[in-house]
Length: 206
Ligand SMILES: Nc1ncnc2c1ncn2[C@@H]1O[C@H](COP(=O)(O)OP(=O)(O)O)[C@@H](O)[C@H]1O
Ligand SMILES: [Mg+2]
Image 1 (cartoon, rainbow, N blue to C red):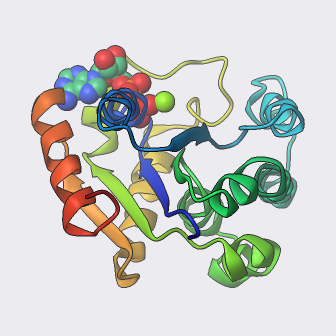
Image 2: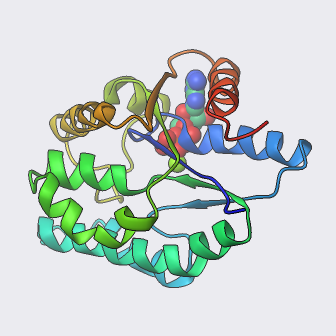
Image 3: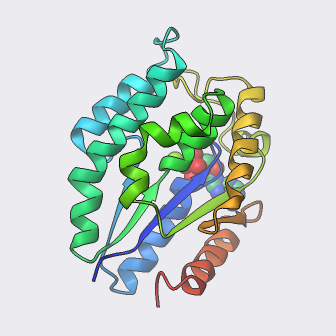
């Protein structure tokens, strides 16, 4: 049987990496066959594209180029990593995916939903996540957790208004039944517990 596909979304510092570590430990303990990956990246070529996208020196990168690089990195990641794992029946857990493109490039950059849909048609046709968990916390609170933005990271170093728009962009995605918000303002352990409950309620894990 084909594996399930779960993605995590949220603003910078919302706790995605932290929660993926908790889930990884849980899945290992439960003997569940899974892989964890991240976007942009997840394969050698995609990680190299990531370095271009996030390089703070590329202030001249236009929004369309940014969106296309994310989409290119995603297709490579799907073909090399996600598809083989799903075909092998594994659970695939990914830190960011196409919803980041909707929120950051479609909404915050203003490229629009249709443009993002068109350049991500490959991902959206056969590789829509079964469940997307949005770690819900305001961008300001999230940045405070990580003691401010990393100035060498081109996306993190966009101003607070941009990140507020990203959050609003994410809110538009509640229209998709697969997109579930988890209030993550509590402790790491409290959030981890909520996520596990959600994974069970959505029949991702037994
Ligand atoms: N629930 C939480 N409460 C307080 N600090 C947190 C919580 N979750 C994560 N953190 C801390 O916030 C920072 C950002 O978390 P991280 O998991 O790296 O976020 P992301 O991967 O979404 O950018 C880290 O220093 C992490 O230890
Ligand atoms: Mg992270």
